[in-house]
Amino acid sequence: MSNLSKSFSQKLKDKTTKIGIIGMGYVGIPLGLEFAKKKFSVLGFDKDQKRIDDINSGSQVMKHIKKEEMRLFIDNKGSATNDFTKVNSMDCLIICVPTPLDIHEQPNMSYVESASNLISKNMKKGQLIVLESTTYPGTTKELVKPILEKSGLKAGEDFFLAYSPEREDPGNKDFNVSKIPKVIGGFSEGCLKVTDLLYKNVVSETVKVSSMETAESTKLMENIFRAVNIAMVNEMKLVLSRMDVNIWEVIEAAKTKPFGFMPFYPGPGMGGHCIPIDPFYLAWKAKEYNTEAKFIELAGEINRKMTENIGHRIGKALNDDGKSIRNSQIMILGLAYKKDIDDVRESPALKLIDLLAFKGAKISYHDPYVREFNDKKSMELSSKNIKLQDAIVITTDHTKVDYDLIGKHAKLVIDTRNVMAKINNPNARILRA
Ligand SMILES: NC(=O)c1ccc[n+]([C@@H]2O[C@H](COP(=O)([O-])OP(=O)(O)OC[C@H]3O[C@@H](n4cnc5c(N)ncnc54)[C@H](O)[C@@H]3O)[C@@H](O)[C@H]2O)c1
Image (cartoon, rainbow, N blue to C red; front, side, top):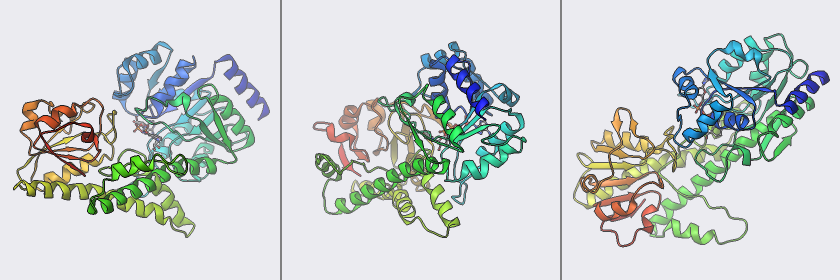
């Protein structure tokens, strides 16, 4: 392996390493961009033909990644394909495919399996394969490695294998791929070394850990930490609101403690491709070891109930105005699961829409990042449209929204993000929820 190591390192030094990224989505695109910026030749592999065409024509694929950046990717010899035979001409393959839950809330590993099979059929000696998708401890060794070894090549002898979790936070202007330390676990010492050399080209800091399972568990711990703390603050909101204590004021005050406290904020439920899903990967794996992950299950239960709770608050608020949910005009403000991005996966706003529509409400939505969804268009946020609503429910605190206009013209605002607190003398009745 040491000869393979030497030639891998030499290619990195010469910047001739060809990087293949399997899965050009929220994680794969920014990662590919970073390598392209450092003058590496990047080929994105995807199964979605439209995604491939958009990338190759330099179109803006996601609202938070500027068109100029996508152009830069192309100008720096980046491209995308669905021809997986080209895997053979890569030096390194980084897997960034989805890891959702199935209908029974169990890990759906079909994307990782399919990507691993496509690599296995086309791989060659000396390549580095890295899994970045979030997953349960043991995936890379127990699932990915045996599939790759169907090629006849052996991990740690003929090819390098590693796991390195993605910590991308789409839309976060303070942290992009290059500024976020990268945790790496290798199948062997040699695998760890070459993976470390690779990522050092695009990130400010690498964190080497003793095994792939440690790296897999690190990512889960980060997301479980968020899920549990969000559940804690959501539960506190429900308790404190009964006592007429403002949770947002409590958090601001608690934040002044210079040690031992980190703020988390309540909301209408959990959304996105990580927090509502990843913790359950560990809960599922725990069962194999005859143990339970009670915190994870409880946090999931509390966070899921928040959407239902907002539904009740809307019903009560309308009732106070002498109205019912049935036939009321309700505008949902924000479809994306968090501010300033266009990602609606698992978004609590969608669950709320289903819940209110089921009860007979006439639903519209406004989201500056999601122009169209399920054949419905984002409604213009004009004073006329605002006045037409019986209630406006703020589910996402996008920056690009005129909250003053809402405060001026709305009848009733149900604010799950505390954005209306900053509006002076609103005419609208505003309920923190
Ligand atoms: N989105 C985030 O903020 C984020 C952050 C950290 C980690 N992650 C993790 O990263 C992984 C990818 O997430 P994402 O948000 O980028 O997903 P995504 O859905 O945005 O992108 C995945 C891409 O993979 C493609 N794909 C699916 N199967 C494929 C296959 N067999 N071969 C080639 N391409 C295939 C899809 O067409 C899609 O373009 C997940 O495990 C997720 O949990 C996501």
